[in-house]
Amino acid sequence: MSAGRPGQRARWRPGAVDWLLLVGLAVFAGYVYYQLRHVLVYRWDWQSVLQFFAYRDEAGEWQQNLLLAGLEATLRIAIFSAILSLVLGLVLALMRVSSRLWPRMVARTYVELVRNTPPLVFLFIFYFFISAQLFPVLGIDRVIAALAESDSALVLWLLGDPRLVENLVVGILCLSCFEAAYVSEVLRAGIESVGKDQREGALAVGLTGTQTMWHVVLPQAVRIVIPALVGQLITLVKDTSIMSIISIQELAFSAQEVAVSTDRVFEVWILVALIYFVICYALSALSRRLELRRAVGR
Amino acid sequence: MVDAVSPDRPLAVELRGVCKWYDEFQALKDIDLQVRQGERTVVCGPSGSGKSTMIRCINRLEEHHGGEIRINGESVELYEARPHLIRQRVGMVFQQFNLFSHMTVVENCCLGPIKALKLGRAEARERAMHYLEKVRIPEQADKYPSQLSGGQQQRVAIARALCMSPQIMLFDEPTSALDPEMIQEVLEAMIALAEDGMTMICVTHEMGFARTVADSVVFMDRGEIVEQAPPSEFFTAPRSERTRAFLDKIL
Image (cartoon, rainbow over all chains, first blue to last red; front, side):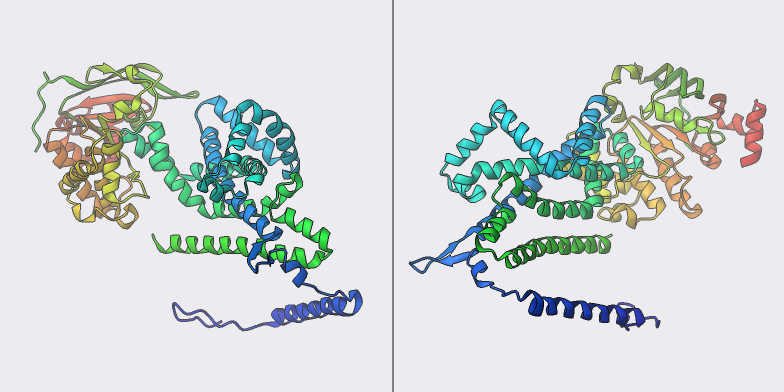
């Protein structure tokens, strides 16, 4: 190894292990190609799948089809859930570091319950019991109905197809309640990693406990856990696909429909996987840039 | 030299029979201490003797378990639910500076005045710059604490505390975490403060500072006040054996 000049990356020279890996990869790729080409004799048909993104109607206008509508719903669910789970997660985190016993206990119980059940099971419970029983009691179903009937451009822009608003809102609430538990753990770790000296410094200049948390502890805590929060956001995007199980009409749900109706299983799922990958990879690239900037500044 | 304080001044801080326990360990035993307005008291003693605990009880960063603490004649018990009201009048400087690392120097100084005293931004900034000039560090106002030396950080911490216009200042070993060459600049800021007539309680091992500035020196050991005397007496004719042993070690 020669020491590179500062600011210049050392040139990569492949060693024996690298060559071995490379050969292994090439053999594997060849095997897959051979299987597809000569054993399965699968006839790829991307065209019939692509038309489920968008097609031209009789008038020659482009129309959005199932998969694109599903992607739109996925993005809506992801964005709204990200915001809502951040808010809920913050509330839970603050409860967990509270000096009073009962908020700590309530939050702890909730977080442990959510984190120690499979997402799918939580989803069923939440969907069938809570949303079916609790929403009418709290009047949330009336809010949803009002939103669905509203013809305001803003609601339309935010929530999309009025016929699917209820479907979408239930999906958002389910996912948020679920992800909030994880977000709260991330935030709590951040809050606890801010030193006692910072807290005491703020108290000593006459701030109340709440002001200390809000102006001194939280800003530093959030800064510390931003990479972990972005990681959680990526998980959230992927977890939207679980919503298909309760018939929330997002990307994975549409994909299933298209896969069944066209029989092009490989094409559909490869395309859908690619879409999820692009979204999540973009987010993690963003996170790396944020970290890099953090490392440079101060 | 700082003028002596006349004994008819009202009491700024009064501790009577103050006790504190950490589980089984008694950190403070029957502490009696009186500090008059404008008086400078230096507290010294071996580590673990309860010096820090005592002054942290005064501004309620710690709770005491027995006896009474009065600030300007008012018992701190009256403020049990609102200790921030005490801390707005009793400033504190820490050994490790405790500056807010996500804020610039001037933001550090403005936070208390804006949030606790509800001052406007411009007024708070003006006040911050005034005290930063007082500790002779105004040119660093827009830097972050991590960009400053230890001595500079501690001077910022002093300015930050002064921005709340406190009536009493507590110093918890303000020079112990500093490199030797930076101790003087911090002591100078503290001396200037003393000359302005601030009521000060300083936990410190800087005996030169005690000699020149203090009206009274308190020696603590194992949670008790062993001896309290004016510096002239304290350093030349200590009454207690324990005080003598301590002075022999550090002088």
